[in-house]
Amino acid sequence: MPSANTQEKRRDELVRAAFHQVAERGFEGLRTREVAAEAGVNIATLHYYFPTKEALIRGVLEHAMGRFRTTLAPHGSPEDQLRNHLRAVRQLLQEEPQLGAVMAELALRSARDASIAALLRETNDTWHTTIRGLLRRAARAGHLRPELDSDEAAALVVATLTAMTLPAAAAPRTELALRQLELWLELPPPATAAQATD
Image 1: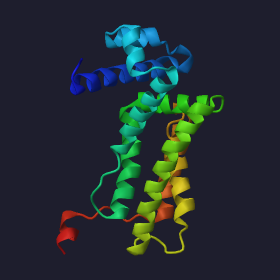
Image 2: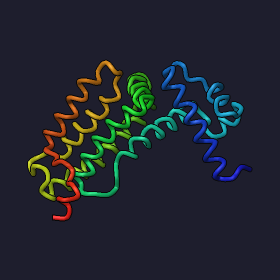
Image 3: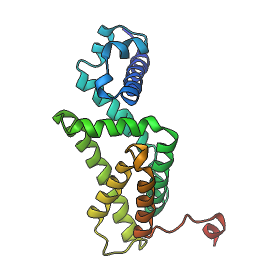
């Protein structure tokens, strides 16, 4: 029986192989045998970790959302966390174009696949709740307009960041939308070291 670390490593290798296939070929090109081969295991081993293709797709989605979660720093003021999150998502998608491709594939597939739609809804709900909490805390601290509806604003943030995963043809407009969102939220610029000591 492999150790827990070995099992986790093997599972991660399978998810990454599936992630790369979806990024390169879309869901139509996702082949479990090729995922197993890329990870250096047989198909039975893949089915041990992921009994169904849906389970493997859930693993791909969890991996993708994990990459997005790295852009939410757990320290700093709520407005700093929010501003840094917006900028970090932009940078992440520029540095990892495969991530945008996978998220776009998941969004397209969700229109025809109820199970993927449910997975996306679940992860987006969690993301929305996190952003809404940051907005509420920033408003309570006096850094955002008090009349701002945190639920609607969170929906706008998530929608704008999700739109950044669209194909490159839409990128210039999503950049404009992100800049406008930062202005609308009136997020102050980051404090400099000199300001922090004043």
